[in-house]
Structures are given as structure tokens and as C-alpha cells.
Amino acid sequence: MSYPKPELEAVLSKTLGVPLFQEQAMRLAIVCAGFTPGEADQLRRAMATFKFTGGVSHFRAKLIDGMVANGYEPEFAERTFKQLEGFGSYGFPESHAASFALISYASSWMKCWHPDVFCCALLNAQPMGFYAPAQIVRDAQQHGVEVRPPCVNRSRWDSTLEPTGEEDRFAVRLGLRLAKGLREDDAAKIVVARADQPYASVEELARRSGASVSALERLADADAFLAGLNLNRRDALWAIKPLRDTALPLFAAADAREGGLSPEVIEPAVTLRPMAEGREVVEDYGHIGLTLRRHPVSFLREELQGRGVISCAQTERLRDGRRCKVAGLVLVRQKPGSAKGVMFITIEDETGIANLVVWPQLFEKQRRLILSAGMISVDGRVQREGRTTHVIAYQLHDLSTELRGVGGRTAPVSIPRGRGDGATHGAGADPRSATPPKVRDIYIPDLRLGSGIKVPTRDFR
Image (cartoon, rainbow, N blue to C red; front, side):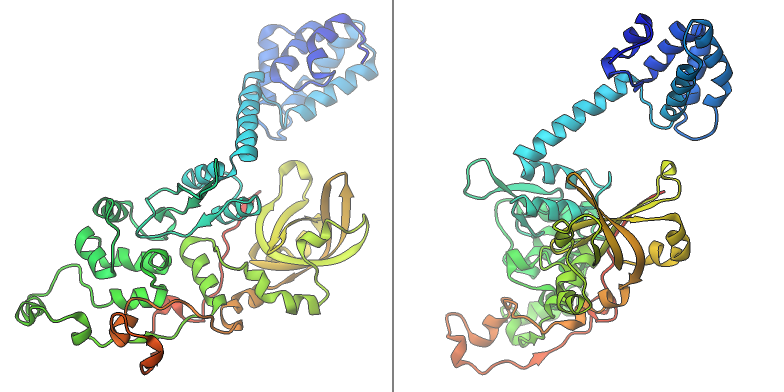
């Protein structure tokens, strides 16, 4: 690296000739162009707006003329000004840059060596940052972290770490805070009353904790009764329906007179129709914002293959310039001011993510689809540079209708039945010798097939 003058080398040598910090720009203006400290500070203020407002341009003539007067070539002075002008959109004070570098290094080290701790900490810091909980959890799973669902008998308000039996490796237990609509004070009642004695039933949980019925319904929606009480969403909601926040006097008196009658005598057990696996995924996204079951796109994979659509992971194996079709859920939309109208979209399927580049002309042509679709497919071309792969979009297609249909496309799967089965078979009885109970369905608006997956996106413009 060569420098026209020693004073310029003293200013820029630590960054190999490129002005990166605001202090460097100020020092360069003072020692090379004859700025006073006050004028250099005005230059710093103009650069600190992080906007293309033209503030730096006001100093063009003074900077170039000052450098030429101090013996620099006009062409070199012009290039220096253009560097400072571009620097105004991203420049940091050196102290800020050092602070960000330290945080980035520490975060990278933690993610590399303790991905379980890193995942848990990010979930507890939400809402924040670039990625939603669904992407944080999926990335952790891809790096070998076991993630366990919310549970009324094991979860706290925040996500926690649980032993796995492996040294220095923990599982992440999702916190009750992920259950949409659940208030922290209701969750606290459940956790405090539970202590070291797990709940044995929904009724016991309601009685010991004093949590509201609406809170129990939010937990049932979040499938938080399955891991601890072996009750899926429908069974849990069915068990919650008879509960009241305050006992009605008439029914309280009747309960007292009947004195020891078991609930099975009063209310015969029923077996509810299980939800399809795809519907469980829909409800996961609707009530906790993520799923630990199959990825939604996996339910559509056969149909997508029939259309010639490849997976996101397959794009990484295509050569540069190869045409392809790829589809996924829309995670992030970015349209930076410095990108001159180019939009960047991140999509995800069951194999990973793909980064799309949408040129301004295509964005204007398909603006409504781009800004509203929850799932898209793209006809494009692979652009590869080193280890970075993008797909340059030529045409986008809205697959939101297909995504909404995920809940009704799969056959029901076998889901473990709740404790109510004991009422039919009796304690210790062989269920194969009993008459199968009549299968019933339950009408719960949130569990009907009309609604679809709504994936929260992060939009930056």
C-alpha cells in the first residue's frame, strides 16, 4: 500500500487506506485539506445522518481545493471526496465499531460452541433483531439442538435449558411466553403453584393455580398440555370447557350433595376426532409462531416437484447461471436505500433458506404479490460468488392459496389420547377388550380448516 504523503498514511494505515471511521474522515480533512476542527466536526455531522441527503456534498469544493493546495493531485482529491461521500451512508465512530465488533465476536463464539444457550437467550430477548423465533429455532435444530415444546408441567415464562444426558449439551424448553395471548401473571400463577409437584389434570391445574379459564385456553391452543398431561389441543380444550373462573352457587351445592361422585359418572368420557398432522402445524404457527413438527412446505413437496420446483438446499448445488424454480415461505423482505431499488427476499422450506434478488423493474411489476404473499415460488437464475448463492428472480408466483390449504391436505395421524380414556377402559384394563368409544368432533373456531398458516415476516425498507 502506497500513500502520496506521510500524513495521509498516519491517518489511514490502520484501515489499509480506506476511511472507515468518522474520526478518520475528520482527521483527513484537517491534516490534508486544512479544515479547522469546527469545520471537520460539521463534516462529521453531515456524514452521521446515514441518509443520502447531500450534506457531505456541501464540503466538496473546500475539501478538493484544500487537498490540491496541500500538494495532492486533483484526481486523487476527487477520489478521496467520493470515498467520503459514499462513507456517509455507513460510517461509524471508531468506538461504536469496536463495541459492535466485540458483540459480534462474542455472539459468534457463543453460537459456535453453545448453540443451545445462544438459541435460548435469543428467544428470551424477543422481540428483537432480524430473525423471528421460528427461524431461530429451526437454525438451532439444524445445528443439533433439541428443542422441546411448551409444557404446563415443565416450562417457565422464559425459555429454559434442560439436561439431555450429554455432557455440555442442553435441550431448549420453550417458555410459556410464546403462547399468544397468555398474560405473564397467569403464567406466574401456574409456575408458582406447580413448584416441584407436577399437575395431574387440567382440573387440578385450574384449582391449584387459580389461573383464568382464558389462560388455560391459550395454553391449550399452544398445545402446552400434550407433553405434561398427554392431552392434545382438542382434548385439552374439551377438558377446559366445563371450568369457570368462579363456581356458580347452584352447581357448587350440587357438587357438595353428590359428595364423592367421580367426574366420569357425571360426564361420560368421549373420544374426539384427532386433527390432521398438517392442521397441527397450522395451529402451531397460529398460537406460538413456530412449529416443532414438519415444515409446512414439506406437505406440498410432491406437488411442487410436479411443477419442476426444487428445494432451497438444491440451489446451493447448482452451477452459476443455471435456471431454476424454487419455492418457500417468505421470511424477510429488504429494500435498503443504498441498493437503488433492488429488493432482497429470504425464503425457507424444509431444507433451508434461499436468498432472492428482485430487480426494480420486476418489483414494480409484481409489487402487490411481493409485499403480501406468505409463500412464493420464483423462476430465476442462480448467481454464485464464492460461497454465496443468490437466485436472480425473473418471475414470482403467489402460493399463499396452497399454503392456506396445508391443514386440510393430509390424513389424520394417530395422536396419543388423554386421561379421559381411563374412564372408558377402567384403571389397569386392557383397552383392546373394551368397546371403542364413539368418536366425536368438537367445534372450536380456531381449529376449523378455514384459516391458514400466517408466517410473521421481517420487512426492512
